[in-house]
Image (tube, rainbow, N blue to C red):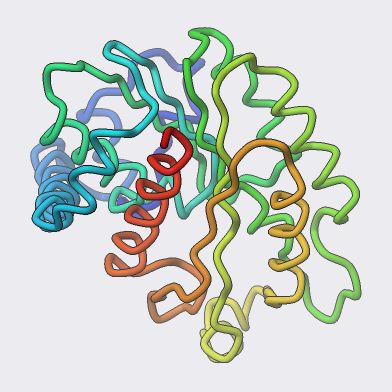
Length: 254
């Protein structure tokens, strides 16, 4: 739960939420809460350090289109909110490779968020206008409930929402396509069975096609590694996505 759920992102009206207030929500003391978050941060940092051992990746980080002092925001759902996410790995890649550039990365992703719900989060995005936005949305739009013939958000509405998001923010922009799922694992995963939730790669691919037609660069990982639920990326999957994102964005500046 702690890896993916971050109440402070959706309960901002309660004011600053310290570890003393957040820990008990997970049945943890503040020390336990901070220790676990620290362990995830260290794991993400180690993944970044391992990636930087590859000279091609290190040089790609050097070429990322983020100027010194830039503010980079991520908009997305659980794949990005994950404390081991591609975006958190990117944070450490920049911190290890370009520490003097003092680039600020703000992760605005909220687990379970659809493109419709992301529109409601625009004030958080525009309150401090970023120089760059990395947007990975659509996976939750593709959710199907029970035997429904329709997705949670229609394909037309998804496209409309994505275009509205882009139009609301005058910043450099890149899309990260929702990753394919493991349909067999999803079907076998009991929590999804009990909730009547399912995802299909045809729906995910349709959203990826919308993004590919956008004028901004789109990054896609076509063969991801998943956790046991078949939906969320494993640490290896997040590493692979981070590498793809870095190389694709660096290529845009070449």
